[in-house]
Figure 1 (cartoon, rainbow, N blue to C red):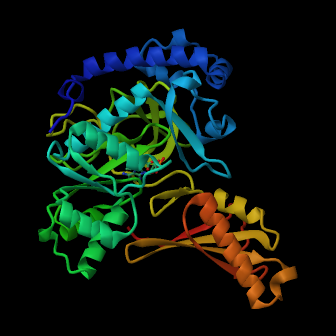
Figure 2: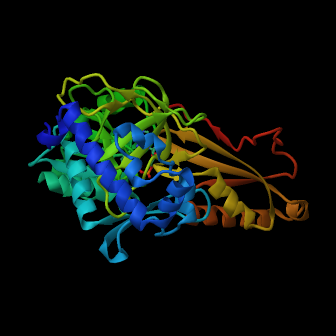
Length: 433
Ligand code: DLL
């Protein structure tokens, strides 16, 4: 079902006219109100009136996570602060998170985009939406929540964790729609098996899964084990949260980008030149409808390609192919974004260890596990085991507090972690998706 027929099936020409109008308005507003954007545009020698066609977008400077860090927490907001009714945050690259804001109208737009997303999988009034995305600063929980309410569906705001109870609630409440990360969907399926709950005894029909990389194999497994259609949904906090792009039930191939709100570009990550549909590169977004926290040419670091072919569902929005990796070293562990530099930041604050470390990620069953191996310094190496244990527990606690994800810390002997001969290999990711 198409939630917003008028916009989602716009002929290309009409869509591009709307995009251009919104883009011009955005650039003017941001140039006038947000000093760091003005400065970057001045440095690049481009003024709002230089944006005459959509291809002029390429004249504008990129925005990166570093810009967000440099203007932490609210320096890139584009409305007076009293108009901001909500903030969310995601992982920054070091100690501070990346903060984003929403006006009342942004929240409305977001709810509408999530209603479009859920509609694309056939959800609507009368559905019971089991929302297992985390509630809080993470955009997943509240994003899906507002979208489901906008549809007129019944939301169960269960958030993550306590999986046995989740299964019981899905059974008792007759949940028909599941919103969760793909790995958590598999976790639920596994717990159902343990509890001897057959998928047929649930009313689940469709799942909306995203926030982390997954594969067609994982889709098959989720669909088989839960007896549902599993759809890929994509988004990022800096651009909106979930509700940036979604698959449709008809094609289940590629995610429609809500192009009336976000202009996607694919760039070559080395030359920064825009690439045509079909070519793989880094995904870049300009938000043309957001008020509080618009971004211009935001480099997502996600790798995909644009699909311009028509889709059987009737939506005219271009699609992006399932995400196939990142150009940076960000990891997603149990749905939480983790930068090795954040781990390093924690380790630098601990006297007993050296800045030589490695992060080993694995998947045990359906759960991601992270081990941080770090060298202790000579001074404490010969200390008793008890003291070493205290150090590793302390680091585990610090990492949990800073990153919001648990890990085990393994202290290793001085000079045992392989030294780099160039770029240090900080991460060994053994997960097979
Ligand atoms: O993960 C928003 C979201 C919530 C999307 C719920 C979908 C469902 P962030 O925490 O800012 O926002 O993380 C954004 O997660 O740049 C991608 O690298 C990754 N990501 C999100 N969706 C997908 C997906 C939310 N479907 C980062 N496939 C993005 C692969 C995804 N990676």
